[in-house]
Image 1 (tube, rainbow, N blue to C red):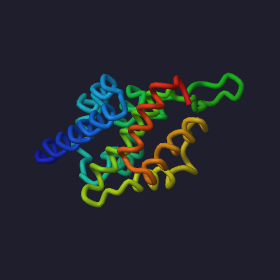
Image 2 (cartoon, rainbow, N blue to C red):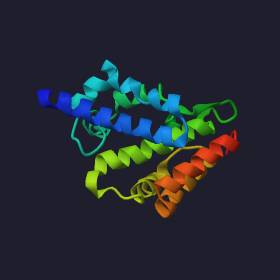
Image 3 (cartoon, rainbow, N blue to C red):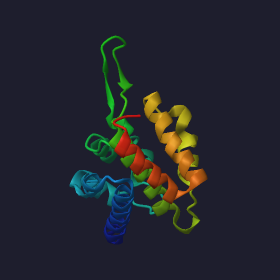
Image 4 (spheres, rainbow, N blue to C red):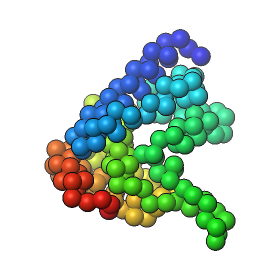
Length: 181
């Protein structure tokens, strides 16, 4: 484990988290933003994050390549409700894990998270189309509730066409007038 990666990983995680906090505030989810991704500072996630740090993508991807799975990711998704992977449950009819429709506020946080991750990992090359492109690339193999996927895609398309300011204003209005999607 490289000592300089401790600081680099801490800085990346913290910059990302602060950007999500800012985005959640723009969306009207102030307290939820403050709690975003705190588990990334736990030893179960932080140590592998340092060990597999690259700076251009999630360390979880590198951990998967090296080990075949990511313990850090399994820890993370089990504690953070803004990940659609958290929202699965056992189906007694099919005896499989099936996606569950996410509550509205966690879908909004997931949107904020994806936009922030695109900004952090793409830096000066970020465009408002990138979060949608990333979402669409993985769409065929993602197991997410269809209504959740459709709403998230709607927000990402809105961002790519109307821009960030307009999209966050729309989200604030939507949250104030709707309980679900």
